[in-house]
Length: 195
Image (cartoon, rainbow, N blue to C red; front, side, top):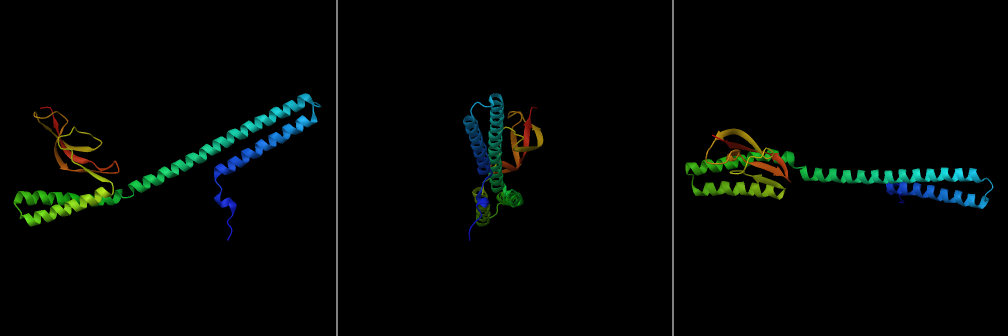
């Protein structure tokens, strides 16, 4: 089964072909003018100037079309890359409450003195979930003791605290998560302020 050669053509190939045709036409006309000699001097010069202007315009259009085709390919490649990197964002958001529940379960089990076997089982489950998320590009951030950053943290309240610098995260109510560098959920934090 033969393929239509136009199926594989690119916009840039079409533009190059048009450019080559215009250039060939210009050369043919110039050769004809040279052969005719100086019979119609000024008329021939005007015709040559007009054809050179047409050629210049054709070159300009060809360059613009080639640049537009290249920009379109670049944009399409970037769109595909973004879609690939962030396709899991909705799924990750759905899993975050599970990770939070495991964290709360561990905190509760440690304060209530639950036996070591159950505590170890919940820790292993939490670690498996975090490892799986990490393999997919999900990062956990726990900003305890760090300066407050509104891009990564959501301040739930501000509390006077003379022991630390103002605008420092003094308590993390909920850890934050990012997917391939984009924040999926900011950390919910308590921030210090000057007394």
